[in-house]
Image 1 (cartoon, rainbow, N blue to C red):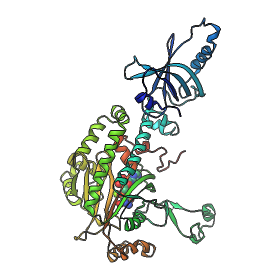
Image 2: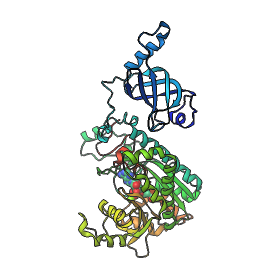
Image 3: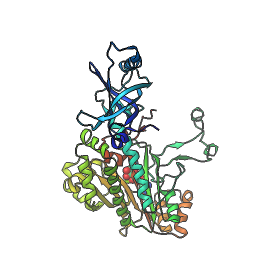
Image 4: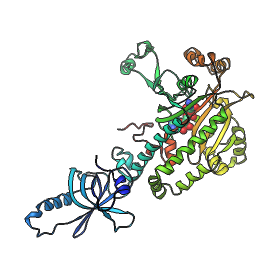
Length: 472
Ligand code: 4AD
Ligand code: MG
């Protein structure tokens, strides 16, 4: 295999022959020289390749070089090429070495009139419309590499702590979060059903013989494996038909959900803090070139911010105290805070940016605004929930200790009007060898936003799916 530019830059000695393959970013022509910047996506840096033009009155033996010059002169941005030459120290600022190029082979042409990526800076909005080409830009290449690095770090973190990776189903009959924002999955002929309006739909006729959906969370199924393997995690796509058109919501996003038996809320909070810090540390160490790019071009100060997160303990506050704090500054909010309200993003921003000056873990929320499975506190009003809020983003992690008493859980489900019949398997965990257990979910895209400083969640996943948006 041909060397990648990142390896050539780091490892090759000057004077060594090199072959570079990639896509042309820019071409500059002087009287006697042609400069081509090639990028292969292995790192932010381009490889500058410098060609000496063949003098016009070249002898016949230089015919090869004349053809080469013709290739060079026709070459446009976006074309894929193979360039051979030797690595030499670079006189240009900002790069250690460049290629003194001998030859170029055009692999795939790109019509410069039609290629949508110009040398100038494009807006992220514009690039969303050409999501198939945006990974060829510096920003989206860097996002893709950081995202890949963080996914690796997730698995490494859990491997080190003896958590097993469990693949939970994508098609399910459960609404784990009880939020009702489900995408239904069906093979029934909807158009026919509409024509037969008035007739009740018989879901026994459907593919699975019942109503099913895309999962909103792998938690319930992960709990069954935590009740057998002690420590597990899921990491997969989740789907929510939320009508929230915001910079932090997707209809399809990836979630990481650890779940562990014999772990209480405090253990879960400790795990969440360690997890977030370990992932950030991984990125600081292993994605430093990309993070420097974000720091310089996307979000100034992002590296210093991440370093400070890693080095300071997270603040803890109960929901009740948080609301008191918000009430003291009620004038600052459009939505007036009160005990029992769901924290709005302006509240989350205030708590993280004005009170904690960093991430904050909010605990013990009112049971009414949290999911059915959370363990009730002795006050019978609040549950053992914890959300990790981050500046700019709001909630990045949501978790809890789970109700491990069958009777209490069943009662809560009945209160909420849930069909306990359908959750017998889930209740079985509480009947046979029940154990206290806890877990949480981290939105992977929100993590990528946090680490890169990218403002819009649609720019940290290759092909975003959101309300009215499912291109490519
Ligand atoms: O707080 P949530 O809804 O928690 C759960 O789903 C639990 N079952 C997790 C668990 O305890 N195992 O979602 C968890 C996280 C949120 O904190 C947020 O980071 C992310 O998932 N998230 C979204 N990310 C992008 N787009 C959306 N629409 C999201 N909804 C939640
Ligand atoms: Mg939540």
